[in-house]
Image (cartoon, rainbow, N blue to C red; front, side):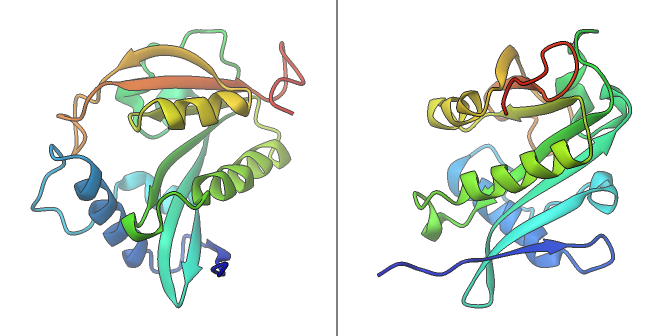
Length: 183
């Protein structure tokens, strides 16, 4: 039986509480170092970002975020992006906060959310798309298949991801010096 998922975009004016709760639940399920006292996880960039969710039987089972900024330090997770060099051209888009309900893992849901965010960043004519992952080789290979290239390994210094294993920072040039990469 094939399960049906509905892709929805949540505007900044809509409640995002179910997404914030899924973030905390998904991180707790896969990362013992994630703070157990957090029942929901949000940050100041949620109000500035576009949110995408996959709905199954009226429940958010996967979610992701896309944030636009004119500078690397103007975007989310700035502590992991500090080392991005001048080769990255503005405007920037950041894909982040991709989570999947543990009961729906292994069904290809990240690729659906990635594709909508890649398309949106291209439509907005962003030159550089940035991402980080600590999810392991499979997730990193998935991002590489879109044309991302790894830049370096780092760790968060603030927030609930402070004690999480190192993250790989990746970059995809959408337009500009390496036009055509990832298309």
